[in-house]
Length: 440
Image 1 (tube, rainbow, N blue to C red):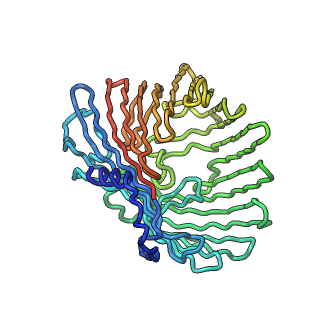
Image 2 (image 1 turned 90 degrees about the vertical axis):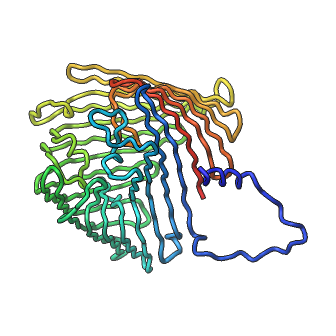
Image 3 (image 1 turned 120 degrees about the horizontal axis):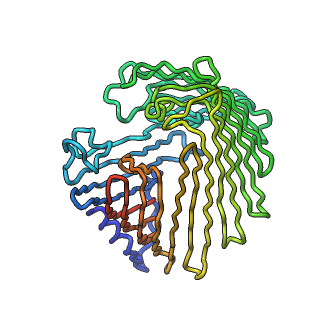
């Protein structure tokens, strides 16, 4: 808290230099190229019987500019501090989190931490903890990655290392490697065709997994429209096919996104790096999934987002808890600066129609901005499943009521207070949070 108070005090001071003082030459420091942000959040939670107090610090830092510097660095990390020390509770405890599986009260997580070299000619060398974002699976890895422009039409990338699992103590024997080739027919256009290969050897609580994934993808664009398609082969057998068509009509203030996904066969547990969700869902049945997302604005005052999803099991797949056919309809209208310039209204509703079970939810939020630096909001929402982004806790059938104040204390710095009341299937919870964010 001392750091927060110091930043708040400094943000209010802006002393003018003496008129007679000559201008000083700008100093050069190793820390000058650093840019990033710091987010601190204090949280107190109670259900009337048990209490929990935690402090979280999330830091994202970038050193250097990849467009002009030969060497850059990136770090994204989080520190979780259990302030009340209530971690080793026997039996059911309503505030159990993933951080409690560690021995100490202070738990650090490093999501990315790598150095990136730019020796020239478009070559990029990266070493450290990183995420291979060019793969749709966003594979996390501790290792090295090399990208080489073979010509103006071809890009070659190779990588190798150890798959990252933040919750595995001894990743002995784990390894991953692969490569990708991009063909760009016309460098002046946005078209790109890609072949990629990924091998992951991962031993976890579900056993030893040797997964080989081969993917083929294409991306084409013309004006405001774009097309994406991807076909993957897992262990020598077709895995899935994804096709997507997106576009915008700026004059009509209209944006759309259409996507279809076809899963060819039943997929069991995979390596965590390749598919972290399969370990929990245990099996994925073949299905056809069609999604349409639409967004329309009316003069900047009114806008409506809507989507329709339809999923059908194929090839005689049997329904289960996490694999079933359904239709989902969503609509989220927003009214900005109405009925007063300082007021905005946001509403969201969705309806699920699945075998033997229909389900709907609705929520809304009022946002009042009495001053450019001050914003107040209050709202309510409902979720069939809700996962806490800070602790990883999952709650079922959550009705949430919130009230928040955000104050911009200085350029790049903001302070917020948030109170939440949660009605869940296991009880009611009250949460009070204080947050501070500083970007530099």
